[in-house]
Length: 263
Image 1 (cartoon, rainbow, N blue to C red):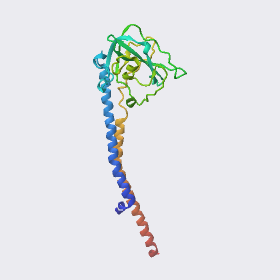
Image 2: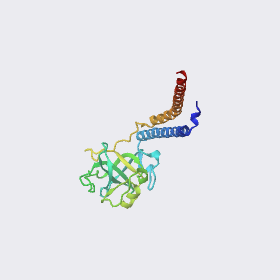
Image 3: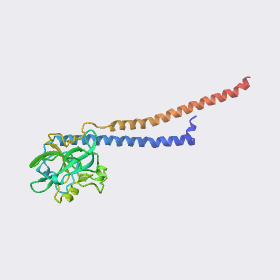
Image 4: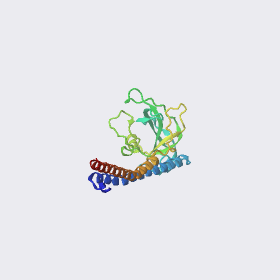
């Protein structure tokens, strides 16, 4: 009664089930590795945010590519803001997902080198091509504290670096680009300002990166593995149902053949 599994329909169904099982197992491990990556990233963010701030000049230099291990590291810098060369970064959202601009102000150190400081978010006006109202940066020598971030690239951020933008507007925060614009030596990466906070709340400080949630990846991994386990169970259930239906059909056929003889 199980020879039906050798028919074309059942051979195709069996092969498809055999292909689905390893694919679902692999998808489960893919989600599990994403879960592990998220947990490791959360631990890195928390450790770097809690670490004692160090001078930015100790962890980066001109042309330096900030490694992932230093992302969000607490850093400090002392210098004077160059507001004449301040730019805004387009298409950035605030903590409530409203679209506006990030304010990027060069901080000139005592040796003439520059640290890029992201001072925070400001709303845009009615004309997205117009330069938005930006609160004036503090004058004189200041010491700032913030989170070290790597230079943004189109490949890493997914943001297209558009050309022909209005004056003093950019799409990416990139030290090499700003070095050309300023004509100065710029340290690699940039500082995301956390202190001192503006007294009037503008620019709006950028919130700490999320390092508490772990996302749904572990749940997705378990789901894929359950699906993989359900495939052979489902195959057996279908086989047994097919066998039962064939037995019932055979019994009905036998009964119909015996009815005339009985009559």
